[in-house]
Length: 478
Picture 1: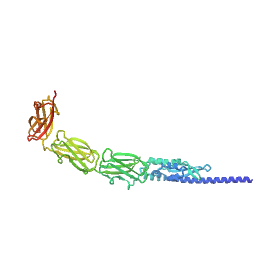
Picture 2: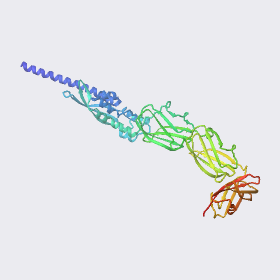
Picture 3: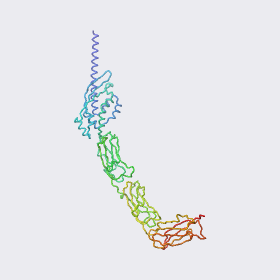
Picture 4: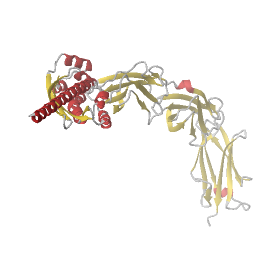
């Protein structure tokens, strides 16, 4: 009997120890579960990692869950109640089952207002209604402590729907710190003329970790846009010229929206009007007396020196007496040069004008000069027979029409020389603003003069002033 009693006593003690151990484990699991659930609702990732069986893995997994305004608002109305606890002290495992009460996420997604502030009010007023979910937490005993065994499954089961709701609604935390956010390189919101880029630098109160869409318009016309992920509290958005030398003056506007087209931020800047007159250092007509050229000028050339470098192509329209005669494209740095060449022997007398436009077809400069009629010059010589220096003995006559820059009203004397040394022919002609010279090639020959030599014709005025010279060659053709 004594032996039986002792055995019964041992079983009773063992049972009491087992029951006590179970109760202790159950209490510890419940305490773990409550701490863990509170950490879930408050997004206390440090505690969640601490109670995870696999710390390193938990830290990596939690990196995909970040702070979000919508999630925070929804979690503020979440509550839970323990439904069941199953413990196996011998195996060191357990299962906690919770009923979680939360706002109806489908209704919140469907009926979300435009702002996070309105959304928060509706959640607190239960405007979307409530729903419940069962959350199971598997625990595992590690030495004398209980840890969450399948941490990833719990986190995903609890958070995924909240973050899906937040993503579908698309609110972005984009509170710009006005004290440190600004147009870079501008005077407030004004850029000086000839600027090549505008940049807005953001300094946010928090990291949005969300995609945004931005666009920049010029005078209400979009010039660039992009969709980017903002995962930092400091970043920049800007525009830089590509195919033009500088930004066109006017108003530029930056607009930032979320992926649901809700405006998050707006800012404007102004690029000052361009004053080309303020950067001109000097302008001159090359080889001219101020802005006047002599009648014997064969080229008109303009040089404009600037006080700063502008790398672009400019267009120069040249006019003669208000008639467009040429258009040239010139590369410019800190200077602009352009010229007009005579189409005949000399420039025609009159007013020449150069109008200069930049790459945006904006007017830059206008300069005028005058070619004077201060001396008699031959503007055009038209030869019917002598088309070049080389002629043959079969040519019978030389015939030239000379056109002058002004009326001559005098007799012109012309002389033809052999090798520009021996006078072999002379004649005269009356002229006004043109003269016709005709001579017979046979008259140039004598017993002392041979073929295959150069000849030259000189034309003089009554006072001996030479107005014209032409050299030609007579060759023997057999």
